[in-house]
Length: 279
Image (cartoon, rainbow, N blue to C red; front, side, top):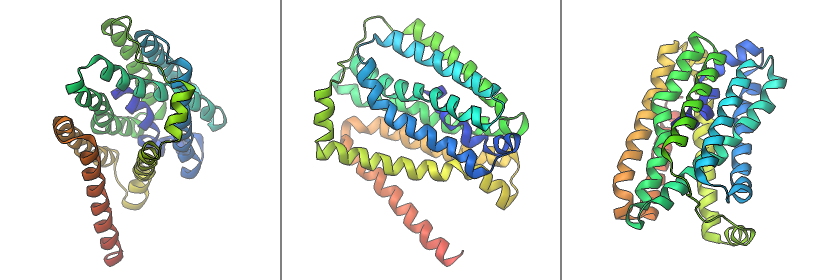
């Protein structure tokens, strides 16, 4: 999941070089973020229904092989017109791997430790924020976005080998049927969870995706400064994930989510007031 996170966030980290190399605007380059979000958001539930019957060792291994091939192809694309459809197909792997890896971890765990197992899987994204995004941002500025894509592809190949080697055969969490999806769509509670998650993620990635161009154009930040900024953001995200991983099974998921969202809201409110007072 660390490699998955690096691949999803590589565009945000390398947006400066990508737009310069392909001779496109930051707005156009940023559309790659929106395309990935749509593909993952739509692809995750649809693909979960279509491929839920496949053994998880086989599924997760070939998902990472697809991810590797997609990033290697992205690195070879000559222009934006070729890049965006390849990128769209590549991130379908993220739509499969992250939720299915979390489901697999939960399925293989005891009920008492299920919450910890699932949050541990998602720590890969936080680790990608700490190390992966700063690294791809630095590589993108110093060696180019294509090199960053290749590195993600190589990491995905290594991940496929590790999954194939260590995950046992016969892991098949219950697949979601059409009846299950109808229950989800008709559940006010579950749809509220989806809505809150969508709003939180949209706000986070909208800001984070354009941070590198903003810091470079407004503050004249160097590659090292941009990389350090991403590392600082990721370090705090990882710290929060580690704390949550330790307490979620004890305090419960609902209080933990409420507390973290309330903390984000309070910080954003203070930031908005500060911006008004000191524009």
